[in-house]
Length: 131
Length: 223
Length: 284
Image (cartoon, rainbow over all chains, first blue to last red):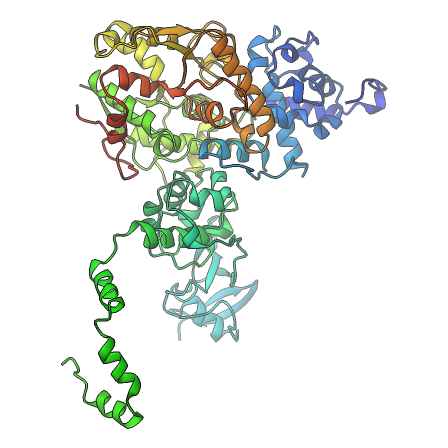
């Protein structure tokens, strides 16, 4: 993710932010960027943007959030949501980004188990990572 | 003659009532090179989908088994593209995750039951998918014993499962590993290996054609 | 005997069969007649978090319709993930418009009327059996065995569906105590193991598992218990080289052992045939 954000108005894609809000049922604008979600995220180390940064992109209506790997690394463990002082369920926002990406034909690597996996893992992976 | 109207691939035809879809298509002038096989409901080649006027439902059936109805909209599905990974039965084990390892897309089932509704054989197809998912190979084999591999469930499945190939593997595994062996066959095979019939077989090999014909004609035949 | 409807889920019929067998044996000793719901299907394992993804709720709701058909008002799960999907879907579709849409889709089933309670084993043991009654059934105390109690995610999050306080849970610790063990509430016990990332990101899951096991060992745990078959799989199978080697068990195995069954006896309870739709009470 870029370390500098271009804040010009013409980059603002409000319909994108609205769509994420509709799909997630969460208000992205409630976030005041305290970073508690990122501090407690067990997967933050593996993400190309931290959870609070992903949320910031959504606030800005920046659809480049769909190109990030972070939503695919998020395992929906909901640690972020229970800790958010503003009650934003960030994992649900991540789910909205995954679903939007999948519906627009952007998908992560195909689900191909490299080692044996039980049903419970495969079902979960297919549900989260394939359209 | 009592005639009704059917629409085949979008074009209307007057055909006699009481014909099957397949016969109606031939009556209308179609020459069926694909999508037609045994004409007896066994081979599964004539998968067909249709709708009836005033009904939102999409019906699926075998063309050779289904009578035409007035106003029917009909399309043939002569072939179902479906993925079947290569496997060697002898290298597989009939255990929990064997089906899932070769057909991981089974895990995409959302239990919508569309497959069951599409089955012309009235099989509990979704139950078979669920049994596959939990590794109940014998259950799958039993649920799908009467599957004719028409592919209609596969065409309708939102999870994009290739059902009939999974069922075939389950039945093969069931037959090869889970069904009890027929003991008398094993006994006879052992007897043959031990040379019980060697003298008779050796004699047959040395006989002339005329001797063989005579022996064949003189054989004991069940009454 | 109390009767209770039971939703096993895929894992209990495959890799988690010792958990099922052990738990059902323990429940029989505790006075429960457990009946598997007929023709159940996969719960979906992960709950769909999107507002418009009603199709992903069809699986869970179809199971709840089966529970309703049995005349039961609640259903028991042993698996944490089944608990999460069933409990959350039951609430999601309680909203009248969603319920109407899902019932219209499930046209071949009875309409779901809602109101089915989804119960996890841990809450059943705490709220209905009680720790005292559980302790009274112990035939063989764990004798102070140091048991790391691993919750993972779904039992504790989101808050609305948590079986206990998401930050300071104690139900599993109290169960271990009732069995005579010494619970080890290690720091990583509520942190995610990586769940379904195990399919494509074994690197991440391996790191997580190493951390969790080191945390458990650091707290002095001799074994780790869980109620989630996916946690159990990851902690056991995705253990990186050099990580602590302590055994990872299902709570059901521990329950059964404390109630007098040894390992071969648990294995013997695992029926030869994968079962569906018949009473699975072990008739102790």
